[in-house]
Image (cartoon, rainbow, N blue to C red; front, top):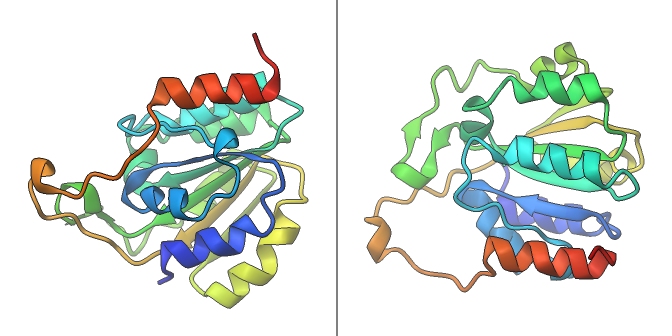
Length: 194
């Protein structure tokens, strides 16, 4: 299993000017790696809806690469979205799944059948143009540049180490973040959308 920070660092080298959204417990580490915060969009607190929201962004901005770092718990809450994505075939959509095999935000409960599910096979079977599985950092690091040059929709499942949160929410470390509205407004300004 990979450290999500290492995954983000390897991806960042090939990001270009893609719009990026990172969700789930692991997604909070993206803010420590990003070098273009104005092209980051926060969907925090939208578990189960991040896939659809990023897909909508890709459809609405066909000239921009849109990258979602999804969480398997979130994807499973709205798994039908992969059929819609595959059906619309957004060439600019890159769907990375950070799979830690558990619901880390709520205490580490295991995702049902977590060691058997092949999310990349599900995406490919639904009709994504390409789908990959990674559990080795070197292999991911040497492949991500080529993946980002492909026409989407592309699905990339990555096994990551869980960062289980066991403290009550009120006692957890609060990291300064931009609000969802702020990220949307800054992205609109960055793209010249009134």
